[in-house]
Length: 163
Image (cartoon, rainbow, N blue to C red):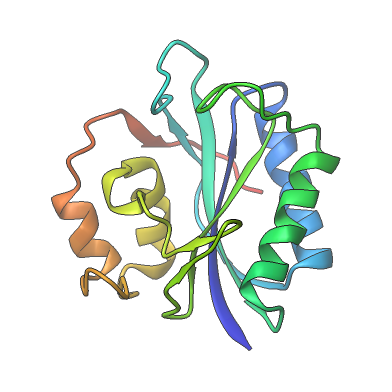
């Protein structure tokens, strides 16, 4: 089994309900969920004139190959109403594969580790909660170290509630 870390988030509609639905669909079709971070409300990154996001990190155990798994995750997004109209625009759900063991992949469908994770507090904060000692396979730093060094100053705060 492979250790895979995902970040799920969205800023349209009932954000908590969409996170719960994504978690359920991931558990049914992508792998066994072994850890879930708290929910974090985060300012929008990349295109700031939009509602804030709810984000959370998941760890799953999966025997599905990385590219196939990414296809499954993209299908879940589509099933949940995700439309890719504007880069960094508002969305019902976004599912990003952040790490897959220590694999380094750069294909048309998937780049691992996620190429911007070290620059995004909204990724690192929830990920550090469940995998603070996980190692970035390119930068050779832990998630905790990357969080300490993160240049992103956008607001990220834990909210009550869980999925």
